[in-house]
Amino acid sequence: MVRIRRIYDEPAAEDGKRILVDRLWPRGIAKEKARIDEWLKEIAPSDELRKWFGHDPARWDEFRERYRRELEAKAEFLDQLRGLTKKGTVTLLFAAKDEEHNNAVALKEILG
Image (cartoon, rainbow, N blue to C red; front, top):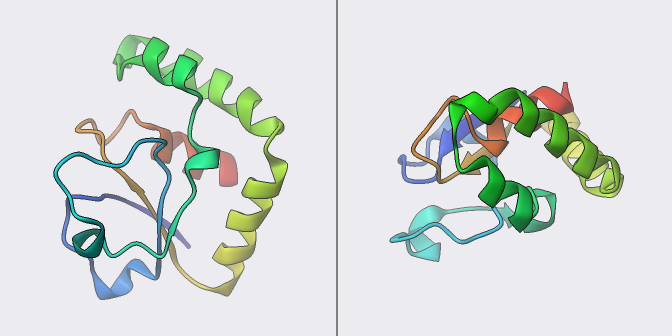
């Protein structure tokens, strides 16, 4: 099972393995408070794509397609995440304020 949560939300027992999937460390949160198990910044969108998107909902569909293409070159990280989901619950953590249009949502779709 793959869940999605903002890193600013309190960790929950049902989160399972907590993985930060943003390229940049979230502002205003201490690493101890984040309680992440892993930071997979390599799977995050490129800086160029992230800046182009700017969390603009009008660019959401194009962002998802571009992100999917970027991830084709990062198959080992997708395989790593898929392997973790077979062992138990994985929660993809993100920092964006928009909970519907962010890389964690797109990544969950891509993972299937």
